[in-house]
Length: 227
Image (cartoon, rainbow, N blue to C red):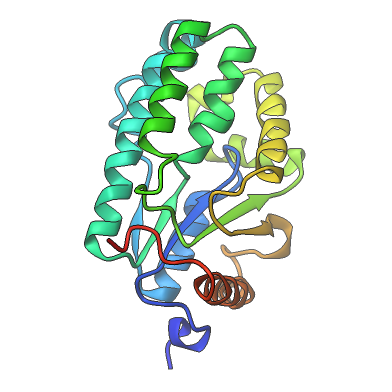
């Protein structure tokens, strides 16, 4: 019996991994996909035409970056469900408006007009009965010190050169966001409770919880996107 069958995880499940920068979303995405024999969906960081410009000038490029992410994630979400599920997704579409766009608006690095345009576009595309929401959102959390250390270890120059105050603010906003998130079921996982790099079987307790939550939610909720 494989792990997907062992923990009763449907083969058409769509699971999204969320959490602040550096928390380990890509590592968790790969570990779950390998364990379940699912496909992966990753952020297209290397081909993003705005990301490097954004880190050098938040005010100039924040709106462009958010619209680009929204379009790319929307297309990817549609493709995943048209394919029939069986995906682990690195980062959710919900974080863009709930955290990043709002943070730039609050800090004055996105104008009121741009923020209103962006949120109206997001609501029209995502917050409708027709948008295929995932079966489960896994929220990765840990201490701020752990996350800052991981950012340094990862070694992306544009992230290492970003002021620590930016990461501190983002950390707090993520905690507030997840406490009010209700678009789909949520599993909160603390990164100190497992070590996927050293102990591969540490993924199994996560799989057990994933299976339980998806089975429970499917008893009461018609699977989004099953049109």
